[in-house]
Length: 86
Image (tube, rainbow, N blue to C red; front, side, top):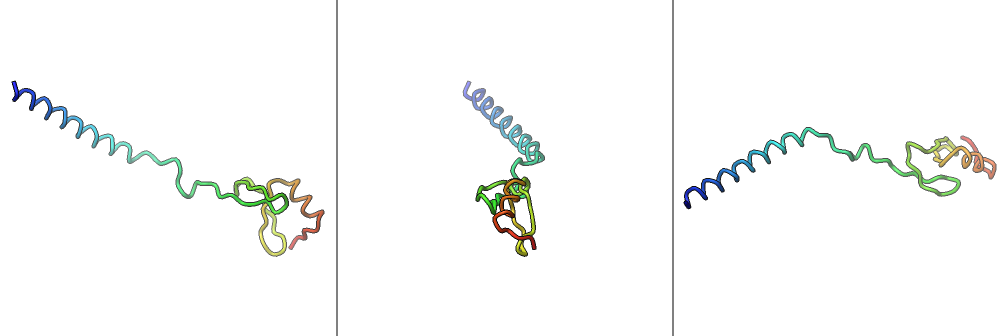
């Protein structure tokens, strides 16, 4: 009776170990969602100081440097108030 119990526990332990190893191998091939390269960098709008994702910001070279704006309206207002193009 005890031998049967020990063999049953040993069988389930081995099955768990093998299944766990197979799942690790399968999951290692799945790409991760948030790589450092994919994370959006936030930039501050030169006009209204709002932070927007860099890939969505309006870029314009002003005063010899690249400036970021949250939209074309902020760029227009910035230029009206004295912002000069390089």
